[in-house]
Image (cartoon, rainbow, N blue to C red; front, side, top):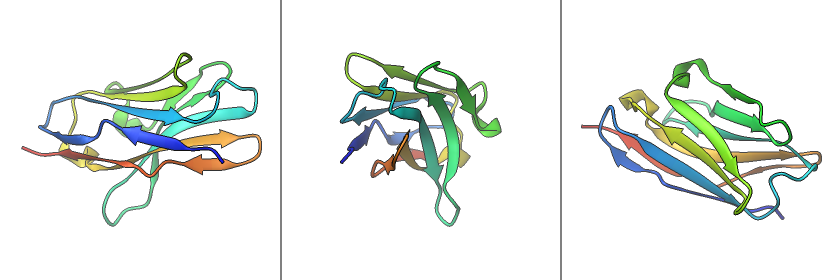
Length: 118
């Protein structure tokens, strides 16, 4: 069973920054991993993709609403996925979830709450 544990959420003022982390219980650079991503779900809304990165080539994609503000990265030493969020806006308020898609299986973390408010 794959475990994903997110951290780094919290309350931040508009224009501020946060870095989310997702610690995985497997080698995220394994050939069994297709890609990793961050999703978010705001109250009353559907879960949506924020950013994703492929395991092998490190190709990235971002939702239009975060382009230029968020970056996604991963680290080999501790099998951790990151989401650096800059210039945060109130509309970025949501629970952020880490996701990993394997050749067989799709796993989610429990989420971390990000609140952007003055």
